[in-house]
Length: 208
Image 1 (cartoon, helix red, strand yellow):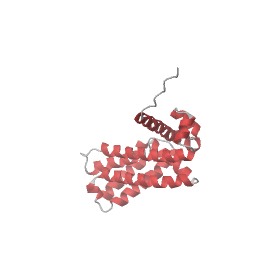
Image 2: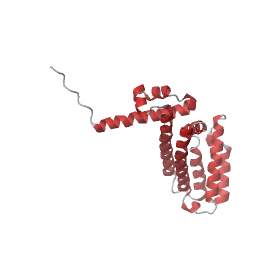
Image 3: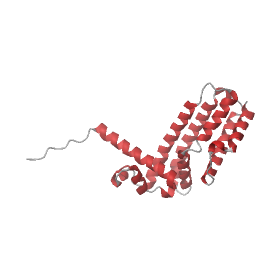
Image 4: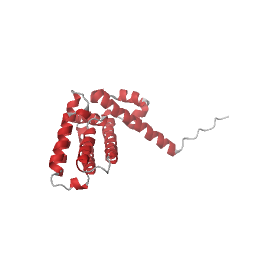
């Protein structure tokens, strides 16, 4: 007597499992980038952290470069979501100088979160990796546009209409990125960074 055939899982469930395992792998890749750097984000380490088989990882990402390029896209999505959350958290009741100060604080928070450091690892690796560089160029342009749109929402339409607003926004963002990078070798509490007061004072002086 032959054994009954095993029915395959419904397509919807298979697709859900595939999406779940892919997301776990990408989350693990970003976490490994933050904790171990680009050099330490090996496929074996990512596989172990994601809790998937070697075959499952290779099914989704046949090579390390493909995995890390996909991780950069995943990272972009997470950073855009983080930006949207910051916009939502800014109280609409704040006005004038209070709104300026809070907007600067929210912008600065983005440069101390884990996703920033994962991005830094990919930026550094992209200098000598053509495929990664091409992918990151597109992704970072998207992130840059979203960050600027988020900053505009932080500050509000009245401040955005100020003739010096764009210059102030670009100066603050560029300065924050540079200061943020120094935390790689000089970790400290970003909430007490003296530059925070400088950025706030500059924004008030030029935009109020």
